[in-house]
Length: 343
Image 1 (cartoon, rainbow, N blue to C red):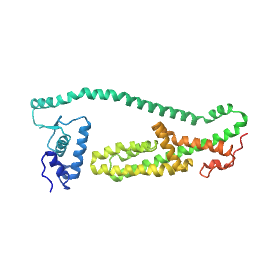
Image 2 (cartoon, helix red, strand yellow):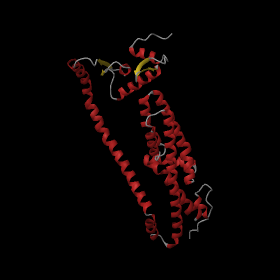
Image 3 (cartoon, rainbow, N blue to C red):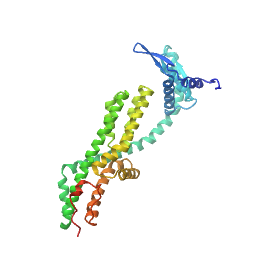
Image 4 (cartoon, rainbow, N blue to C red):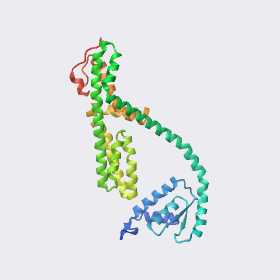
């Protein structure tokens, strides 16, 4: 037999676990709407975690100034479950009576301000430094790619001028294959971004998540970074869903988990395999290796770098040095015929 509730937190837990479909009712747009026990319990627990995340410790005092509404009860129970003391303030009280209560609560907050400022001052330079380094690297890569795309023949002529004449045929073949391989990678990347962004938007729309179109666009751009981009772009969608209701949160979570599985185990290996003719297992391994060694930047450049390595090794070593036919999963451009041997 379950023991009788002894505290207000025990009463809350018993109510949240009761399974009642209408634990509370409130008027929305002139109509009475129920709040189920599960939704009530989920919201209180989420608020309690948020209160602890703000630095509120057991024994601290938190004031509530609000009209009578369900959110008042949720906030009150969340404060109690976080171990703090709830200080209810009626909105009908005159300012002369409210001020002393808030001053008493503010005293606890004032003690924590120096610690919070010190923490922010310590973490901010690190976060800003990493963000600046990441953005600078991304801009540098974009500018370099733009120059290469704008006038590739200029760089081709410059490199050819540095090579002995007997190496020029091999260089021209490698250069042509690299261009075709990287163009295929770019097309495959855009296709992957479109598939993941479209599936995300469609899933969020069916789940009733507000702003599903914008969230789909965020996922579209986030997918440029394999795996990590899709996960990070899910955070705004989950926050929007949570602001609607716990049910919407779990629906959105299911959508993003499904999209992440599709992107990681279908889109990336299969689409990119067709685009760059790379073995899926090799592609996944190389992406994991580059991510472990170089972080986010390594993930971004893993697939094009693997494409370059694969083409160079196949052309210069397998065909020209070993005089062998490349494996069948190499780029189609390599099926034009064996390259001239190196002398």
